[in-house]
Length: 184
Image 1 (tube, one colour):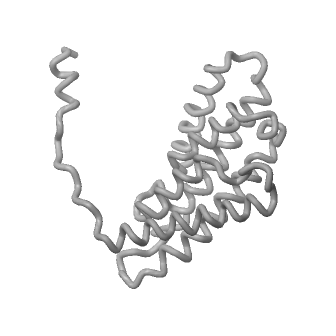
Image 2: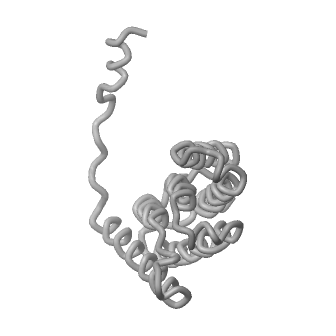
């Protein structure tokens, strides 16, 4: 392939989408606020010394399930499955190869194999990559969770986010704003 053809692939092919309506923007903002507030409250109840349930990947999930509740990445199957499977992949890798693999390789494997598993199971949820990476780069406290990590904080947090998304995303009177589009 010539360089010209290669770089031609990077040209704009469409116009950018228009901004969402103010109503959609405000519902997205409210949903993200309530969700992260409940995660913070829940985290403080069970672990006041650290933000145990306040993982960066949950912030990214909030962007998807409130900002784009209609896309496949945001559906319950993807939200729950993507997080849990990615967490499981990272725990497996750390348990099996943690001391024998170079740190960068372990990080790269956790994210890339999480993507592979999410593709194969049709549970692609981009924040799942962060969930996997968080365990690999995490403190002793996070890694000491071992096989509990996919259950808590991950499954517990994802389920809490799903419950809030079900309430908030269905409060709107707009018939086009409903959640989820499908469960499985």
